[in-house]
Image 1: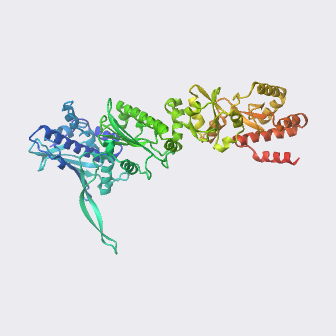
Image 2 (image 1 turned 180 degrees about the vertical axis):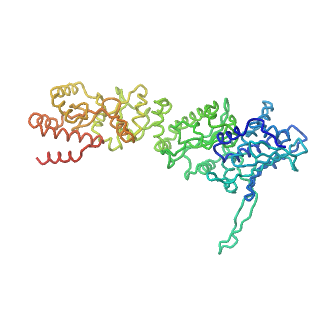
Image 3 (image 1 turned 45 degrees about the vertical axis):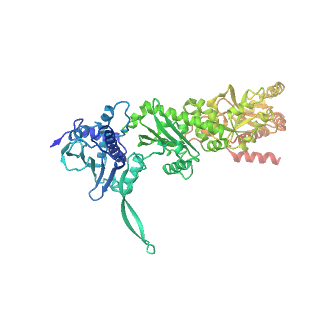
Length: 625
């Protein structure tokens, strides 16, 4: 007799299969989890019911397939189901027998129930067009078979089964133009799915595996033989006591699971109990993956519930600035069947993510203090990501990350932290000075650097495109503001120097104004005393520096963001008097020198020259006279 599903129509089942589970591979995980639950329940009951005799060592899950019949079979020796339980658990979509069993337990009784019949069970319809469940309950002498071909309904009939437990047979769908269902009828594929999703199920998952052995070395002839093997490892590394695990075990686990050829730089282990409980095993890689700074890279930690994989990469567990972290998180506080949408709203997941972020940050702070060389190695690889985290979200996370940053020090000629810079500041120094450029050597030769060095102030050299954006987002450190050496308002001159410069600019105001007009791309031209040997330099007004402009210029879309530049001329350099003389006596020569000096300043700043041929001809013309 055919029964209709109690819950919803075919439309609901189709909607659930096609939208809740977009990854068809997890059907095997769901059925194995159900089998594990049945074994757990049987063992638990044997502890309180003397009539039930169980040898825990013999409890196992068996997986097999038949390529010709297009079937996959999952069987267990668990508690089984009565006719009424088959009707209740499998006849109602999203009805959870395991959940009900757990709810009936007292608060002091602890047993892991990781799956549930209902939504998870029906994921098998993603890959099969018929499912047969044959089960004999520990509470019944009769066995029954539940069979369904989808949302149209199901049948329940008496069946023959000698032993207690459940056997599920899936008839795999025929291949279509878009779907290769036959791949599931493959030994390697099934083993891979078990290893990926169910490796840490606490009962052995057995499967017949094919092996080859050499019978004729000369002819390189092999023969095949089959034997039953346990596919899963059963005990997750993160569930073992840390003192019982060798460093090499962590290294091997990391390299195997995350396909890396190098050992991790750092292992971070956590076992947290409280409002939410979880275990985590995190790794800082020793190098960035090839795709790390590309759009193809996916951040996230492998998320497990009671040793069963829920999600291969749960992005919500890591902030973007720690996206380099690899690892696993295992918690009892999430349902196996939780959807991605529900995960994003989960209070438990948010709390775990917050704890993980704090743990990683503290581990990095400890590494910086106690193992500086290792930290420097880490920072050279992933420091850009921390700097990105500083200015992302409008600087919301700057206070969490600013003490993890390091920059090259002109005075110490090595990487130092902002805290170390401030601690070593000279008496009376009010600002943290920095200079930006593509390399240390190029920054070191900048005209603007001379004046700051002459005052014996340290300068932080910012060599990565993200550096100045991060510094700008921080704004100040321990009440010390940051000052770009390229800023026109650096204010390092003495009062006497300021007065002399003021007089020079006032007495030559008309000349300088005409230079602005000739150049057309600067907001001002002025004499300065800040330069020592160089004749000219470009400085900036406002928040956008020259290095920032270079970043904006490199973007595919022209944002139209430009630095407001000022051409500064060394008042003590011979070029100063040359310009004054040309302005009075040779306007054509004055125009040429103006263009040449501006182009020179742009070259020094690393900016392109719009018409290099014109400037080359002007230089040759001046030299030849």
